[in-house]
Amino acid sequence: MPEEQNRSRRRCASDVTTQADPARRTPIPSELKVMILSAFIIAIGFGIVAPILPQYASDFGVSAMAVSAVVSAFGLFRLLFAPLSGRLTQALGETPVYTIGLLIVAASMIATAFAPSYELLLLFRAVGGIGSTFFTVSAMTFLARKAPPHIRGRVAGAYASAFLIGNVAGPLLGSVLLVFGPRVPFLIYGGALILAAGVVFFMLRASRLEDRKTRDAREKATVGEAWQNLSYRAALTSGFANGWASFGVRNSVVPLFAASAFVGTGWIIDSSQLAGLALAVFAGGNVAVVTTLAKKTDVWGRRPPMIVGLSIAALATGTLGLAPEPWVLLLLSLIAGAGTGLVVPAQQAAVADIVGEGRNGGSVVSAFQMTQDLGSILGPLLVGLLVDLLGYEWAFGLTGLVLLVGAAAWAAAPETLPGRGSPTVPTTPTTGAQPIVSAEETAEGPNTSRS
Image 1 (tube, rainbow, N blue to C red):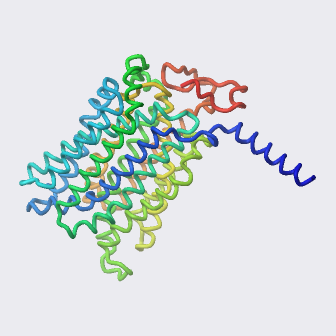
Image 2 (spheres, rainbow, N blue to C red):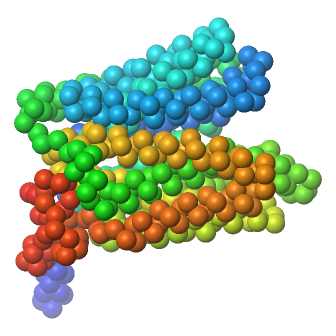
């Protein structure tokens, strides 16, 4: 009898805990799971072609700068067409723009496989950048609108994890596919994108038809309104910093440093292999944190992980140029990856909080995407110039400083998680910021009926 009473008490305690924490009993909506599956398919394909593309471009007999231009053209056209992607998302809805974007990139990949000249290769990659910003902005807008406020961190973490795991597995698959010829990886990626477009088109048909009926009635979040929110300005700052460090410097300057700074050290692998390993270790630290801690942003809030993650990434990246041994480089890469893993899901969830549940925030999301792309373009250029003038120590030091500016912006910004925002900040659902929550509402958990 006492044992039965104890079990009864434990069940009651568990029920109370579950009721007090809606995030524990709220599953990720099925339509968001479709987007997460699509993200994994896309990431696998991107991972296949990313390490192959520079060598493919160099086979046309062009200079190293021309090879870099193929990579930069993709990012530049993402930046230029981000405002259009936001407007189209508001006009047509998220899933049509998402599908169109995937098919544009698929066509560019198939065309790339058969590019007869360097000039056409450059053009095809630029067109791919247009499609990329279409599906990126529409996907983030869809997640922001559909994700329940109290599980946005978990949704953002699952979406980011799908991309990360796909990007880790993709290069391994790409190296295997190369035995069939240099064109095959691009054709595989094009096919993967068509598959992802088909998954979204057919599996989200009911959602698309429902959205078509309600699209004109949905409130639109504007950049002007979002700009009044200090947290949105902090998100733009941290997005620029993360684009600069993670998407720009990490992929362009770190491999150069690893390949040149440790030549002749007699380590267990040569310097060229060390470059790839450093990127893989960074990705490993990123995946480990995103898959385990992303959902905690629904408990801790968005602001603490942003401040801590950006600070950790700043310290590890800023001292990268001082690494005396290869193992130190790998350790700092792992730490920087872990710090970035705290940033990405919290940042996406914060932007979704600002847009608000049920609202069409295409322009707000596209402005955020533009700042991140701008950082990824400017970062390698300015840091590369610093490497030539002053050396890697100053180049990585500047990158660490940029990340610290992002952390400082969030230190001065209010929390965006519903129920945890500062009551001293007058906010309304109209601006996309979170409403003031009473003590009674806080005790009952996040109010999902308010955006």
